[in-house]
Image 1 (cartoon, rainbow, N blue to C red):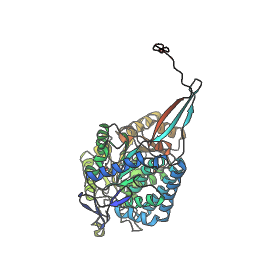
Image 2 (image 1 turned 90 degrees about the vertical axis):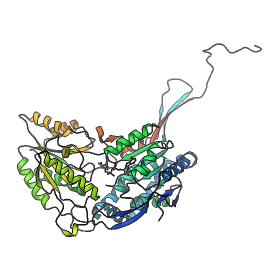
Image 3 (image 1 turned 45 degrees about the vertical axis):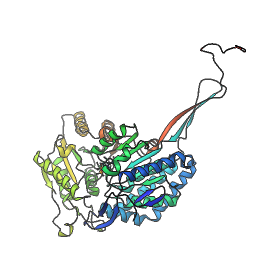
Image 4 (image 1 turned 30 degrees about the horizontal axis):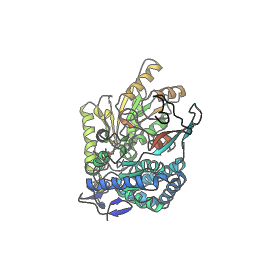
Length: 501
Ligand code: NAD
């Protein structure tokens, strides 16, 4: 099947090779796709450029764009099981998780349908007669949208929906490991009424088809979600032509538990925070920072419960969490655990692959807890992106010192994506939440997000925001139009020549 979607038609890729997409739960081949070349990526860019410069899309009304986005949401609802099935086969995540993801994606398309006409500009007082002055928003132009494998269609929707709502055209490059739902999306966009050339898709590796998108002069904006190292490369590549860049990068997210928290609930959520989707969640709570007076009981109980977590494939209804995305990724997680142990952490549970022979062909790794960690360890500082919880403690000689110490440890990271604080003391909750240098803070909760609220990172977790109104503004330029309705010569530089001169 052709896998390049350019100018409204499916085309065969150039000689970018082919790739078997394997389900991470058992290694079975679930799809085979042919990948594009750099030339294919540039052909997609040219199509998006033409559609932006000459097509009708940028001038369609906000109402029409909103209707199209609602139609995409309708299609997602109608085909929810098929989309969720594809997502689970590519990622290995539990079907129930993929179904929740599809519900979230519907919400994202409807959110941006509602926002398509939001803040459509304003009139500014020019401070003089016969002049009108106003601010208008316009689409940025051609967008390169590059997405990761952990929430393939959800991350894609966070970019595609606002890009379309604002009137842009785009080239989408999904992760090479999880292309199936992007293929579905292109057909859905066409069915919903997106004109040819507005939405384009190229498949392939980052180096082969991603990099050319970030370098092409015809691209105005790159929106990327993925790892820090890739983000750095993309920022550098985009600098040559000073593209707008939005980066949603990694996180190493603190989950702080004070002794005055509701400890049963805090403990339950500490497990979900890190072991959901085997820890392959950018905002996962991989750093537990617990008050020293409750450390022993709290961690003993965490270990007892983590030991019982059932891992399994996407269609195993008894499974509580799934596999890692690939053999290479599992090796990376294993190397972080080994490094943590070498640096002095204590392995309390997990730290190995499961024994069950039925899981042998998948890339499973057991929920792991490393105790006695300190903030400088690589397993604490770097993103293992696996089911690995590190435990640090804090103490002090006064309530203020407790808070200071917890905040200091939690902020000791180059990342700043998300985090949580657990305490029944409302004042403490507010104080700590405001002092944490992370883009989302949950108080007595972990993980929920709503499309109405902005999402994004402090520090090296990224640039720009997704979702909310700021997510739409990433895809809009803002123009000031000054209209002098009665221009009159001022003769600053000499008098005009008189008649007959
Ligand atoms: P990755 O950086 O390896 O790849 C992401 C995408 O970039 C893929 O499509 C890849 O092919 C492409 N790519 C790679 N090199 C490129 C290059 N030189 N030029 C252009 N494109 C290139 O990330 P991943 O392993 O797919 O995803 C996991 C990472 O994503 C984690 O770090 C996670 O924290 C992060 N993430 C962040 C958020 C967030 O909201 N901040 C959300 C989800 C995932």
